[in-house]
Image (tube, rainbow, N blue to C red):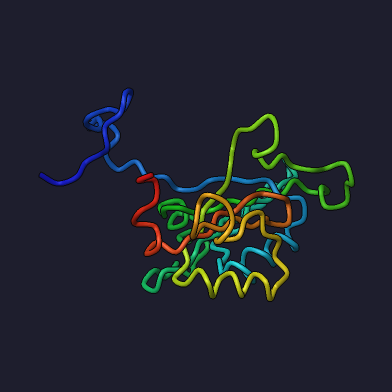
Length: 179
C-alpha cells in the first residue's frame, strides 16, 4: 500500500473528496523595505520574483517569489503569469505597506520571541557547506550554524526584517528526529 499520511490523534485518515486539488500556494511575511528584502531573497537566496501586485487604494504591494526549478517557465503575458503564479506550490509572498521603509517605528515580530507563534520558512540547498560559505561571504547573520546546538546539519539565518530562515541539505537529514 502506498504511503498516505503518518497517523496521530486528530489526523484525518483520508482527505475528503471535497479537498481534492487543494494546494499550499504561498506563505506571507510583511517587509519594511522592499529593495533591501528583494536584494536578500533574490541575491542571497537565489529566488526570483514571479509577480508584483500593487494595490494603490490600499497602499501596499505584494511580491510573489519562488526558488526556480529547472523546468518551470512562467508565462510572459502578465495576466497569464498571475494565474500561473496562484497555481504554484510553496511560494513566498512579501507584503510591503507603502511608507513603512521611512517609518522608524515599524518593526515586525519574528514569531520566535515572546509571545511565540510563527517560526520560520525553510530553504533546501544542494550543499549546506557551500551555502554557509556563501552566507558568510555575504555577511548574512546566523542564528544557528550547522555545527551548533542539538540539531546538527541544520542552520538558521536571519533576513533583513529579522525573520528566521532554516537552511537544510535534505541528504543529511535521514536520521533527523529519530532520537
